[in-house]
Image 1 (cartoon, each protein chain N blue to C red):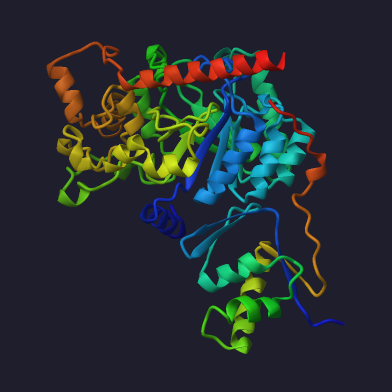
Image 2 (cartoon, each protein chain N blue to C red):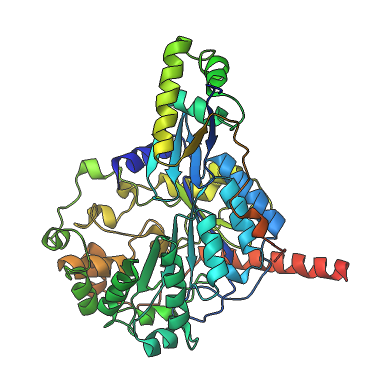
Length: 111
Length: 386
């Protein structure tokens, strides 16, 4: 069994960069979070397909003066907290992401 | 406002980011509310592609809160296509609708698309009163059905009760209905002038005695009524740099025709997204930049008024009364009803009475040529297609 961890952002969230931080809101309960600079780098990189340790090695440790071990532990804490609030999904397998829940049902036409 | 939201707003102000935008998709509507400030004709609404491009631009500019409103938003056949597109751009989405077109399928889609809240106007718990205001028989029943469907999905529903002379006695009934349906209740005692400057509908505003009763009704607020209604302290030097509100500072409004204004209640034409990029209008519009310069110290009457630092003065209403640096008579009336202390403006008017609707509007005329240009564009397009 793989010990890799894959993280994908939830589709039911609102998020926007504000300076070097990111605001994230859970659409299910309107709870607002702000992510600091490091958490923002992780947030932007999680795509469901790249393992968390690779994100830490390639995105975090290259931008911040921190060891891989410490950075990975911090990253795992961050994604665990985000997962608690339904903002991300964590899996030991790559996570295929659909664009939007129920997107196939939409049939729009020009007004 | 929570500490986190206050920090977010402060950061947006510091970085000149339009944190909140209200986008009206259409002015068309299936109701004909007696107090509505819009005309309901289509003067050349933005197309699906134009709105999607605008949503891309707004996301890139940093817009977080997106209120999608109208008119009735579901009169657009591409409504769900646009809503889905907005969801992909990760806005915090709030909808304003009358709910009449929200059936089970629509409620399911709204739930699936992670909308933060849906605001539905309910004027009265009595069908005859509500339906007489909307001029649509059966509309109260239809709107309540929509609220039930949305609530069944756990969606946050806000029941907005706009007060006017027709329904002034019904707000407690609407509040009880909201509690029964599990919806949030808000009451708004302000009827605003029409966007073309017509002030006739202001006659529907409730009188001062009714306003006073609303402000002093402990069941409506969550705070301390005595404190809320206490005579204000005159503004000090430290209040003089106070900003009037978020309009033009961290928020703006975009009409169905692409016109950008500081706020839906502040129709100062500031640019059009069909002619310029949204972010360029936001950063460089002379009108928005002028609005941003106005602080309490720049308001000759309000800076001298005892209500100066506590008044809920709306700069848009002041603009519609002829001077965006002046007082808003409607807000002066509210401050008086709340505290019993007349504003400087009310005292001056008492000393030198003038007809209530005599203020001449100058700047609002800028709206009319814009609408004509887009009507012409649509007509030309139709000719080519034919």
